[in-house]
Image (cartoon, rainbow, N blue to C red):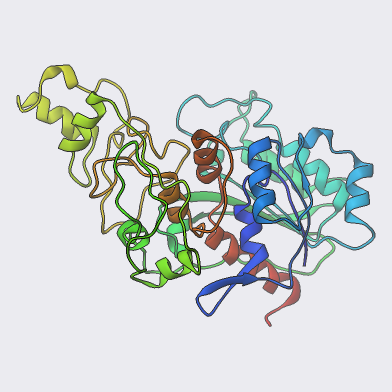
Length: 377
């Protein structure tokens, strides 16, 4: 299967196509040929290259990719799938929503479809795209679908979309994402979205084997053996840890952390102040309902973002340790194995982790795409 990954990020989608699961470990998928990947951010592109050294990485703005250069890379053989989705910041329901240049990058995706003419595509974005409106108050999702249904006079796709939650695919995290799937009109093929599992993996089951770490400190070695199949999968033959380092918080945040139990957050803490149990100077005057929240050990994690170490931005306080999540814990929760490499500053790494498609979800999409294009094995 020949694949192009656009807006690849650190490679979560590529991982799910590049590897398959066999006997409880990730093995190279010999049926997968990633023709090239494209990522604008320099450090993210470097991290991608560390993990997929034999994949051509085009570290440049997608707008600068010419038809000639793309056609040369693709060659005379048909491309099966284009995967990936533009940056999601413009569509998110958290913070300011903007129909800006980033929100319009789907037009570049359409341009790539016109040049490469793949048999199908898998376009991913945040759930906020469902309610996003353009400047004329039209649905952005409907606009994208219409564009993809009619690329040109001789090229169009039969398009369907669905919201998938990563937690239903063996990932210890509630993470809803919209997937827009297109099958080229000249193919007599029908896409069916993959079905998930009923069982859900808890955050404790995912990360409890990682060594305890204090604020401002880092651990680079394991201190116990894996305790379940997920931990074994994540650790397979890995002998050291990277980016398992905890952020250092100030006195006010630490007061919150020490007083907020599992499942509680900003509102609970302010109630303690209302009841005279904590001084008024610590009152939390900003943030959403789930900010400053401690995770619940027996439940899946809330959505991992680049703010995974910032309690004032979302629920990210460790379920039993008085600190926020480490980047490596975030990667585990996303289903990146411990041997997967990241690159750059801690801020870069957290963005690489938080912006990625979970590899196990991408793997489920690959399996469904293979069945669609080539039938069951």
